[in-house]
Image (cartoon, rainbow, N blue to C red):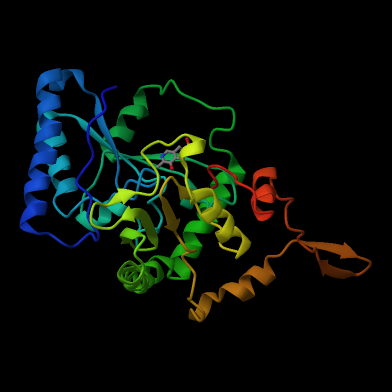
Length: 311
Ligand SMILES: Cc1ncc(COP(=O)(O)O)c(C=O)c1O
């Protein structure tokens, strides 16, 4: 496996300045150079996160993914897009690649596939790839491969995304979130940058806005986290649960947030109707769902301690 630099990052999927175009060309040239040095015949696939998540919410500028698709096709290399974080509406489209009209050969998905209620991951492939396995065995398997509960949860979830218009809602609220984040950046001297696409967003904290010096070094030791553990403890004490990593934190609200009235598929009514019930005498009674016990790290955090890397 050979690692390559990712795309230049930008604040929104649409902006495209002259600088961005130069950065896209340089980024793609970097990939093409590696392909040339290694020999395209030795490379089975290029795998990218369509929008890089944990590593800093890096949104490729318009043109980068299209260029990567063209590069892979030209050299006979498969393009695999990891949409485990960005898939199923998170970015305001069904899949992040839809922002750029790109069709990968393989797409990996998980979290949003079942809204994470049940563990399930999947690789979505083109018809051409699927066709091959009509008469060639796929030598791969897992103990809980295609578990019916996971698959049923995925089908139910996909219906909810469609019926409740959650993808459209994420797109609409993404505009609101972007405006709020821009306001935060303007107001707060410690906010070095904000990036968002749909309801997938990140705030970067800096020591100095002019130099963009981050509040923590790259890949910090626990002792180098500076104010970040206290910051994440503060968030949790105020009921805000999110992923804080190094000098940045994510704001990724649920896709239904703010979508109060959605017509036919009113979510609250459905949640109530689907609550597990148990029979008591002749009457059916809703089972009260107790909150799960807090994991140790979260408890420490709620007490004001330092959880290190929460999330
Ligand atoms: C973008 C991305 N890719 C891959 C993975 C790994 O997924 P899995 O745990 O389903 O193998 C994760 C897990 O968080 C992820 O966020």
